[in-house]
Image (cartoon, rainbow, N blue to C red):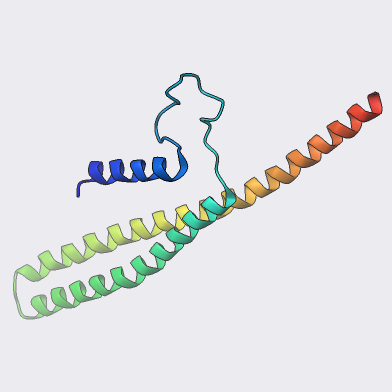
Length: 141
């Protein structure tokens, strides 16, 4: 399955599940009124949990591939095979990209945890502001 096919499938599933369209505005025109993106703290938590799970699995499974590639490169080099240096380059390439992917997963997980906490703080602040406005308007009547 290509990326475009997978993306189209995920978008269709999101529409079916939530009625929300991704990367589009409501067909009836305009930007507001029912078509706004709504993020639930539960949604953020679930995505953050998935990213954290992926981070753990990728770290464990990716390390298996890295060590076996390193062992193969070392054995080939010790046996005076010219391909040993090429396999070591594959190892180094894998190590670099695995680290990049692990960092990205960690950033996603951490950012969603931060966003979830920040949304909760924002909700408390907005509720407090609205309460003060309500009390003030009652006082001014």
